[in-house]
Structures are given as structure tokens and as C-alpha cells.
Length: 227
Image (tube, rainbow, N blue to C red):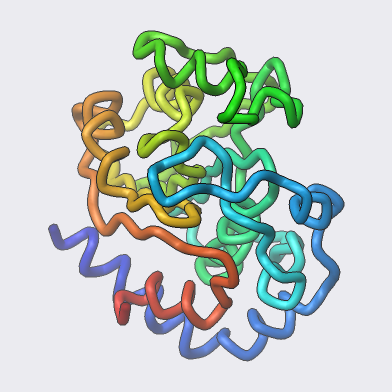
């Protein structure tokens, strides 16, 4: 586990030295997707498929990250429909100084696809254990990463099926996967067995759930191993 200890030592030093700059960099306006997430369906405590209510503009910050990757062995990969997971992914990317990579579905999810009270697309995919929604371009490239921060919303207590599509197609052998999720009430624990099954030769650890309003300071502390 020396790789993980070294990663945390590096990240903690980076957070302490760059915290002020990172916080200043998050002061920009939120993306259009994140701004529109205020109308999204809030996630229920029983593990509904929708992400929680919109992250506030103050805490969501900007999606801008440094042009260069400060830690080439780390990747930040995320899937987000309403912008909440994207906001946290952006903050993690700020902390580790890499550009976040989005998992884009070949067929985007419309609002009706996420209405868990109806017979919607996301419900059908979650109920069908073998469903693997196709990936659109660009497909996240994690070939050069030793550590992958992997973010997603919680849909019915689990990760969206497209996360399994990504893991089954990516080469994660020998890598460390650090899952993080956004949810209004459901924990991340129920999603981990499928993450581990989809990446059998990777190490899955340090998983963290974030609720709405996660701040850069919260994320920095977690990344540095202090939370």
C-alpha cells in the first residue's frame, strides 16, 4: 500500500500549498448544466435514481482547472446528469490539479428519463442488471493513471449502469479506484460491490458520499486524507 501512502502525502502537501489558489479558482460561475439542476428531482432517502437538489452556486464553483496536470498518475472521472456530481468532481480536480474527464452517454438522459416515479429509462436500466448503456465520445482515458477518483449519482442505491460500462471497458488492472457519489440520502455502500465486480483487478477504497453544498474545503480535507 506504499503507493496510497505516497499519494496521500503528495496530496496533503498540495492542498496545504495550493489551497488558497484552489479556493480562489472556484469563485467563477457554475456551468449551465449545474445552474439548470435546480429544477431536477431531488433524491429520496430510499435510494431514488435522481441526484439531490442543486449544489449552491457558491459551493459548486467553476469547472475551470489548471491547464497542466500536476499529478499525472491521478485521474478524476465522473458521470453526472444534473450537475451535482460534476460540481464535486470539479472540486476534486482542483485539489489534485488534473482536468476532470466526463463519462458521456451515447444517448443523453432527458429529464423524463430520470423520473423515478414513472416507467422511465433509468428505472429500466437499474432494474435490468445486465444493462450497459453505450459510451459516447470522448471516452475517459485512464491508461496512465495509478489512482482513479470515480464519481456518480446514486440511482436506487447503486451506481448508474453506465459506470459499469466504463469500468468493464477501461483497463483498471493494478489501479486504485476511489469512488465518490452525490445523493440526497442514500449511502455509497450499496454501490461498491458492483464497482468491485466490474473492476476485479483493481483496489477499491476510501469511498465517500457528498450531499448538496459540499465545499472545496470539505473536498480538500477528504483528498488529503484528513476526513
